[in-house]
Image 1 (cartoon, one colour):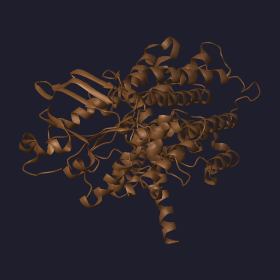
Image 2 (tube, helix red, strand yellow):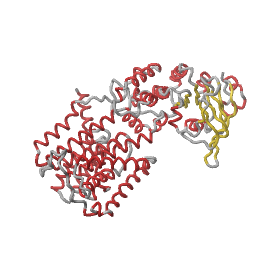
Image 3 (cartoon, one colour):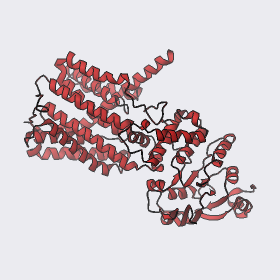
Length: 250
Length: 325
């Protein structure tokens, strides 16, 4: 069975500085996989290469068996690759529903249309509302993002990505900036995500990582240090040394 | 753009207040017959400002070179009338629209790959290049002397342009109505909503799979088409084309009008030209040498104290009254 997403010897260098060094990575269909590493490990660069924001210096990215290395961002999304952002990238002056509807409209091919009003596309609105209901945001659908608490904004980040119905979802620090008391809500939402979506989560909150992920890849200085189950990673001395200190998890 | 309870962007139904500009325009036709020439000029600038609002206010494309499309439309209509003996105003207007669209598409495809200051400079460069071409190609354009001898046949073979400007006024009003309907249709459509998305967060629009560049090229082309039509109208109503239609001042003046009225509000494009051109008319009569001082002061006040323009002030007042009530 082909991987949902895989990379082969993926490299990225900015001049003499190599920030991703021959990364071989495999995300299985329906996987719950975490990518961790200390600051500057190259996690965001890796995600940016996967999504097409940054072109790799060399190597290959394969999505569902198809080589997507040369494709632009939009084409990767159309092929089922969705992402969220570490720092909220929302349409701040639009309503919560509009934020999600923009994604749904793009996926359904409604977005380029000019003849009918946007609101006349009831199928977009109803799908957006259903999605918000599943994330517990139905009551906030009419609120502007500007007026929404930060924790809920993080959920809208996820809702927009889900509006694309991705096969592979990259979650870049979904709990970033969320107080620890509220991060359980993010985890609840993550736990309820459709099982057929392969999810790669990049996260600093180790509790969340070890509770959510079935496999963990540790990236250090642009290289894969180790990959394994949470239990294996929790016991790996190299990981403790470079990343976890003396904390024990799992 | 506000959102409404039904969802997926703004409510497209025409509100009662939206009939007001048309009622005022018709009332002006009957009540101010001696100002119809100025009125026609205002209506043309409304259409021109509407085209600018589409890209500046809704798509977030900043430009100082919109006069390129307006000026090209003006010259195409003028050259057809004065040099090619094509006097039908509808044909002239269609040609002005097509020329604006073609130039908008070709230049937009190039310049919209850039952003911010680079984009701003490129828009300026395009209108400067066109200005110089118009200046040098004097056999076709009349050069610095301008293009005269513009002949306009009766509209639809029925309505002749009269010296009082009645036909011109109504003709401009009808074209503006069509332009407004089109722009409104675009803004409330899924395409228009996606433009708002690009303006609000182009990073996210890329991430949801929107072909941002092509959306911008398309709206830029549509805007250039409308600006071309406005240019054609100015030629038809003045029966003369001068180099000023392509000048940087013309583009800057338009931007000032839009900022005065309120950017990204459709009707800011209506209010701005009314205030600007009437103020210009009055101030130029009172203070022929210093009238720009008055315009400048007005702009400074709006930029400092009313970032949403005149419509922004009105919105604020209405909101305050509602809170008190």
